[in-house]
Image 1 (cartoon, one colour):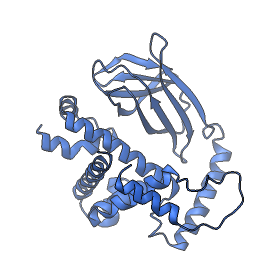
Image 2: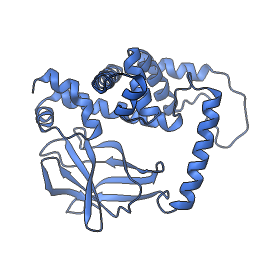
Image 3: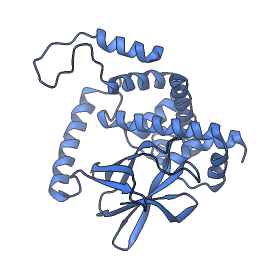
Image 4: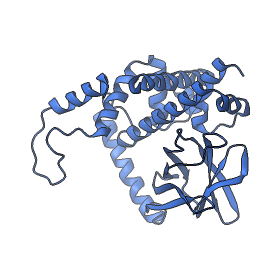
Amino acid sequence: MTVARRTASNFHASRSRTPTPSSDEPAAGATDPADVDAFWLDAALVRLSEQERTVIELAYYRDLSEQAIASQLHVPLGSVKSWKRRGLNRLATLLGEELA
Amino acid sequence: MTHEAAWTRLPDLLDDRDDAALLAHVQVCADCQRQLFLLGRVDRLLRESASGRRLPRRRATRAWILAAAAALAAAAAALALILPQQTRSHGFALRTGMGRLVGEATMGGGDSHNVSLALTARHLPIDHGQMFVLWAGESGSSIQVGRFMVDRTGSCRVRFNLPGNRSWRHFWVTEPERPRAIVAST
């Protein structure tokens, strides 16, 4: 496990939770891998430029087309394509460093 | 195509944009193959994250959350009434011509326009490369669902969206350059 993932696990393990009896409650100290992935993704998105992050968030979280993003941001379609490519490539590179 | 140009445009392959020059480069460039593999994982992480939140939590407003919840509830209710068969999850297996199991997939509810297809490939034959194409067919017509790249064991996990207004009955996998050479099928 890499430093970032350990940090994510520690972060989630240390968060106080209101105990609620439930048969679905994970074992004490367990960390949902999906939470670790979400933590990593949030941390990686912060490392992108504002334009790259905005375009990726609009594309994935609002499911907007590149044309719709360009219209919403009042920028050329080419800029949207370029920011999205750069942002995704940057995230993939960060993930590669994480897995190395 | 130069390596730098190909590297820049690798994310286009996530959107199934056909680019023969780009694909030709990727097939002979180990660095681009690795980056494409990582891009696929990033794409999956973003889609999984998006399924849990349509906007980042730090930016979401209460009004937006309430509006989104209302819209989702309305859409789900409409979908349940209009397309009850489309939202039901079901799975299928992909086998080679020799009957070897090389993939499993689950189709489930996506949104009002699409159904989600999660494919897990295992030990696909990589004699001719690590890129493959998934096809879907119904009575008399077929579409290219998307391209995917497996690791050196022929395995990967990938997610696609399919038009939800059709009843997909048959799926098969081919190599990108040989659409008639079926590697595996349902």
